[in-house]
Image: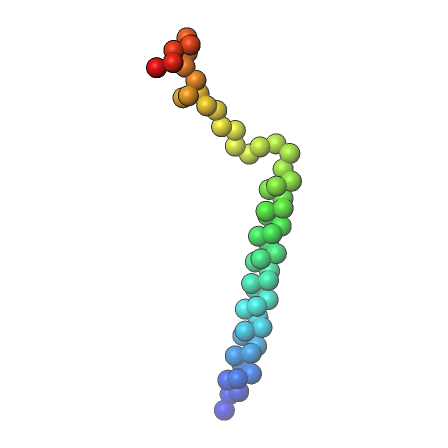
Length: 56
């Protein structure tokens, strides 16, 4: 008869390892993104700027 308790603990340990790998990957991605020197997206306020000085 299989030892289900041992199988469960092995599975739980592997799941915990997988979660640790995913968390580390997320943190590395966030670190890489925040260390970027140039902005990834540049927004312009062209819709808010009125040509000709109109303040309508």
